[in-house]
Structures are given as structure tokens and as C-alpha cells.
Image (tube, rainbow, N blue to C red; front, side):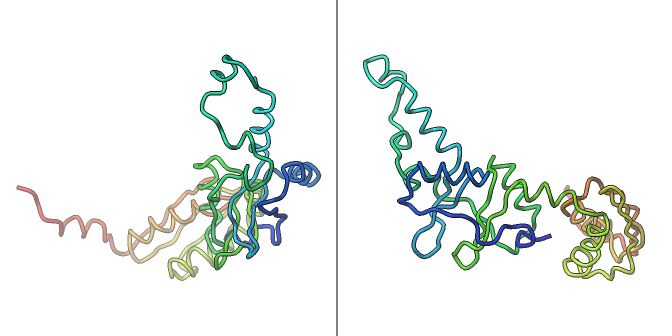
Length: 224
């Protein structure tokens, strides 16, 4: 599954000079946690989120004067003085392309601890994908998962005739059997299937005609 199949098209955005009050109003009224910040050419300059606004509120609520206040605040944080989206946003924004696998988007969000990714095509914003989008997609029907494995993984990605592999999906658990040409192909099939959104586990009983991995190890030069 690709990012473009999950993303929200024409997402809400703000400009550099949008006030933080207006940003907060949009986030609150729309029930979202972040907004891309665009320039006049629809290029993403950053992302402003609930966390950025909370950071501002934390600064306003902290000690303001005196020696103890100065010590408590430490080094000045420009975001504490932010009044606009451009001043508060996190920049540069981490983005992803519409044709990238959904699993890649999930990996980025988990590793970077973020909730959303602006989707960029030819340098311009075309959508946004969130953790909620990925969670909804994870709960898709077994039949849809089986179809993606057959059409996208086997045929389009690995160029393997789907007729050579028997696929069974139950509750997101995938069972594979059949025979492919090489042991490398068998291992690649299992690895790619594990990356399909909605797959809980993979049980592979794939066999192979040629054990190319064993042949390769035999051809490696021996160390003295």
C-alpha cells in the first residue's frame, strides 16, 4: 500500500504569518494536532503543532523576572516569544513522497516521534498522512491484504508469478506455501510481506528450486 492511498488530499494549511491564536483555533475546531506551514508557492517550510503551542504556553506561565527567574529559564528559547506559525514551527519538516510504501511512513513516524508527514510531489504539498491514517489502514480486510501481496509484492515488486505461491490470510496472519526459483526469492517474499500494512505475522513454508545462498557461500574465497 502506498502513501497516496492513505493520505488526506488538500489538507488544511497555514502561512508563515498566521497567528498562533488562529493556529490554535484551527487545531481545536478540526480535531487535528498539526498543520503544514506553506509559502506562496505551496512549498512546505515547516510544521506547527499542538506541542509548539504548549511550549509557548509553558513559557508564558513560567517565571518572568528576577535573578531566580533568569536562572530557571536558562538559555533563551526563541519559540517562547513566538507569535506566528512561522516563528513557532518545527523546520525543516520531515516529508514523504506519495509513491512511498505506507510501511516507510510508519517507520519514520515511530523513529522520529512525530504524528504526521506532509506528502510532497515535485516540491509541493499534495497531502498529509497521519498515524491515525495508518492505524485505520492496519485494520483492513484480509482479502485486501491478500490482493496486495499477490499483485504488488509478488508480481509488481519481485516479478514472481503469483500462481507459484499460495497465500492465505486470517486475522492479518499470512501463510505462504509453494515453490519459487531461488532461496533468495523465498526470503525476499517473506521480508516484503512482513512490510505490508495490516500483516500481523508471516508463516512461510516456501520452497525453492535452487539454493543460491549455499552456492554463493561455496564460491567465497577461504581465509588462510
